[in-house]
Amino acid sequence: MYEKHLAWGVLFRIFHWAFALSIVFLVVTGLYIHSPWTNSVIEGSRSFPMAEMRHVHFIAAYCFMGAVFLRIYLWFFGNRQEKFWDSAPVTGRNIRNLFSTVTYYLYIKDEHEPRLGHNCLAGTVYIVTIVIAFFQILSGLYLLFPESTFWQGVGLSIFGTQQEARFYHFLTMWYFLIFVLVHLYILIWNDIRDPEGLISSIFCGKKFFEKGALDNK
Amino acid sequence: MSRNICEKELGPGLTRRGFLKGCALAAAALGLSDELIPRLVEAAASSKRPSVVWLHFQECTGCTEGLLRASHPDIGRLILDIISLDYHETVQAAAGNQAEEILKETITREKGKFICVVEGAIPTRDGGIYCKIGGRTALEIVKDVAPKAAAVVAIGTCASFGGVQAAHPNPTGAKGVGEILGKPVVNIPGCPPNPIAFLGTVLHLLTFKRLPELDRLGRPLFAYGRKNHDQCERRAHFDEGRFVEQFGDENHKKGYCLYKVGCKGPVTYANCPAVRFNDVGVWPVGAGHGCIGCTEPDFWDTCSPFYERLPGIRVPGGGGVITDADSVGKKILGITAVAAGIHAAAGIGKRLTKGSK
Ligand code: HEM
Ligand code: SF4
Image: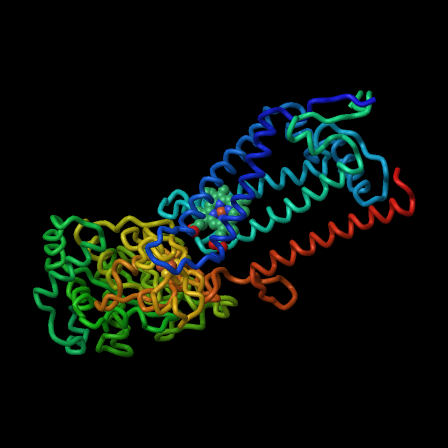
């Protein structure tokens, strides 16, 4: 017998998809800005590939910023699973879960602790990701407002010159690519091993557990 | 001009026409309305010319050359006309002890009033012994002269940020003046900088009795407030996706954007496209070569390779291997994909041998 539990609220799911889709757009347009492959040789043909890619990059960037702020808000004001403390490696329960998840993922142990929220390994990586996203936003804003002495002050103290900020901005893109790859792989892996409905939970918010499995958790 | 300087070297004297032209150019660079030009002219023509002490350290004298050997020497002459250049090793007649005396005399007489211009970086390693003039290290000289000045202007990227001698591995421990003095100075970076930026700063000081507004790196905003990329004549080609793929190709001949062959205009604050050099209306991108970012700190390290968009990654240990950023990213991504593949295979293998749980 399985029972349904609400894991993720609506705001959380909006955050997730705003974050995921904006990353797709940011990476695609960012790669174009980095190395533009079109060569529109006909002049005056009303084609603005670079201008348009940058435009989409900046719109996606604002969605990305919105998503990151939403996530930080939910760290403090979200439901129990969404809160920072529920998945950060700061409590005994979570640290034990971190080790048991690692052994589970390495095929050393077969059983794993059912949790309505993130397991602690995932939770830790997500927190790191939001922190990295935050710095990506700072370098992006520094690049976006080159004539503002405020952003120049912020950018110089964290990244250095515009060129260095571009460099870090570009390197950080690879973090997001790697994150997406690993994230999708582990999700599918978990979904195959454990019929919790992990993947559909980010659409409908609900996960499935054997009756009573979450009691006294 | 002080008697000490060889006037003849500089060619015919400055005409009134040249004088006004120089003032108008500086006013334009400063972004002043033409109503203010008379004030500028008045300040420039006043008899109270500020005394300037111009120090040379680790440098190539290119900044001085850029200033004096302009094709029409109006700007250079104008600068020499509105300041009293009391000490300048390249153009002064005096040498040896006599020159040293003049320096000592000037900084005592004009204490708190003179402008100290520094050209070149200052080595700090091993007590600064890598640059000595008259038996004193550059470090000692600048610490003696600069604190007595009313204002310190670092001309060129070396004096501003250390320049080429501060490039990795910086064997002499070269630093910019601002870092040595630990107080803000006006930085006029560039390799060489445009004389207009220096002229504008001096005229601003004379006319308004204060320094122009600076950015966070001490550069006057009137000259370094905007990126080359945002003023470039090839910008339309950038937006419309037309790029030079290789020097000398068809696109290069057509004057397309130099982004893909490493132009650093998008990260470089300067007014080169607006002011241009040597009165002949040219700047590197105008001549078909990408901007190399010469007004930026550490540009030798961060903007090179000059013909690539982003610098390589210095892998620590391993003998400082330089790998380009793209290939590092791709490799890590590849390793991650392989790791996921191995993980999946291990799972399938385990299931085949043990049966599913
Ligand atoms: C996951 C997030 C993001 C990724 C993967 C990403 C990726 C990239 C890449 C690869 C570039 C080209 C770098 C180069 O080679 O020069 C770029 C440029 C840029 N990005 Fe992002 N970016 C992200 C987020 C942001 C954010 C949040 C902003 C904030 C406003 C932003 C603003 C910019 C700007 C202004 C540029 C420079 C465009 C230009 O000057 O032509 N990016 N981005
Ligand atoms: S040539 Fe350089 S500065 Fe000019 S538009 Fe292209 S990238 Fe920008």
